[in-house]
Image (cartoon, rainbow, N blue to C red; front, side, top):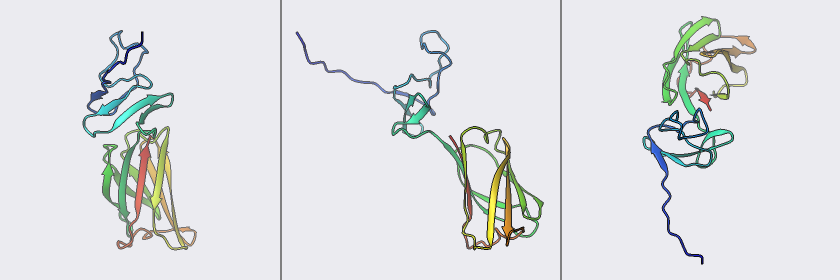
Length: 171
């Protein structure tokens, strides 16, 4: 005989993003409170976001990879280090800017996070003569170069009425 069954599903909850356990068995004593199995749901009580785990790792419940972001508005003039106005920092880092050579700048303090699956984007409203590029120099340092008419130049980031942002996303 088949009967209807009413059951409640309890979603695991905890503080922070869930983690992948070091072993496959939660009963052996090496799991921590944030560890989850593939397919299990988990709610971060700090943010209210819901996560799950699949063969690619921890993802939000909509299937997108989890990520942390550092985003700042950047201005620079003359031979000064760029001025950074941080607008988002879920990476929890303190980034320090420096001037090295004409058109060359460093953004350090990423604490070894610039490895693996990362994305760096720059949203600069530059004219057709201006351009810039940003490269990962080490796991903690970004190198930013600015050009005018194809030549390294200062003051490309000097116009304060034009918003210029740089975003680092770590997945």
